[in-house]
Length: 382
Ligand SMILES: *Cc1c(COP(=O)(O)O)cnc(C)c1O
Image 1 (cartoon, protein in one colour):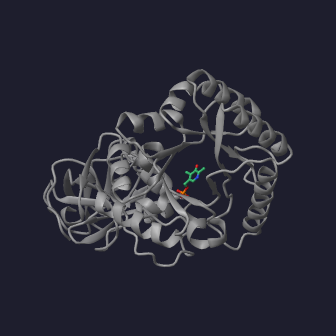
Image 2 (cartoon, helix red, strand yellow):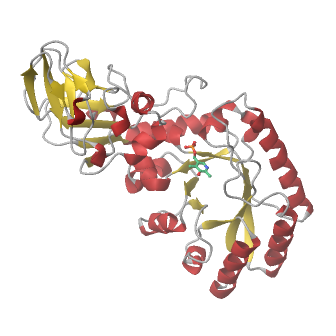
């Protein structure tokens, strides 16, 4: 494997060439639909500024964020492209600033629409607003029962020049399970919602429904734009269902080994002695724990890569550290421990950690951080 076999601090490596590559591949797969790269939550733990820069360098026209504040942060960082934000507490948003900074805001209700229209009026320019309809996820979005009133009111504001409806969108509940009947049902409801909006006179620039999994698995759901998050980072949103798209996981987490030592048969390891050595062995101390986002649920389940082999985690993962079984080897302190990476050389992946801890790779990468430092690299520097 490329890169040094010795380290002096725990780090999160983010391969920006992988992110550019993934965007280019995805853009090709979804064309003629456009690509939105979702960079909410500090770009799924990969770091907002460098990721946004890489994504734009790959030619991606839209960035997606949850909060308006995340969109405004992108503007502060100099981003000038299209940005959509989709979730804030109504009334607790710097609406006027968002209008001035050309952030597309999402309205789920007439109440939000009025707040956005008022900001458009006071700034003196049409606020860019996208309407979200709930087609069956039952999370955010306007219920279908209220949709005709929402679109009618939006059209009135539009005619008065206080806002412009730039998009209409919705979100799937089960796109990671392509056979699930709710996918067809949601797409059908979305088409109905679009027809109602069109009949009311709305002509949105972009209609969008698909997240990563649907963008690949359900071409009929691509419409004008797809909102891809996880695939941008090279991870698989629907394990077992996706074709090989040649995407590259961008994140590698590695730490130096803090120590290695022999232990006797019968020795209990880590808090609670939940693992006891059956045979004499050697163990290694990895200086990262749940404070760094290493999931405690992966105690005695996950593996790491040390000195050319996978090594099982033994016992409870602690706040700052955990222990791995080195099976008789005694590598020097400072030896590189690959917690997870792309998997090219046999090291575990974020998906492996997700399975070991009963979650999804989204949560693994998004929670990684704590005291680890992030370092940005290009492919050949990993
Ligand atoms: C997070 C999010 C996405 C991205 O989902 P992925 O599965 O990571 O592609 C898309 N749309 C909305 C509304 C989201 O909240």
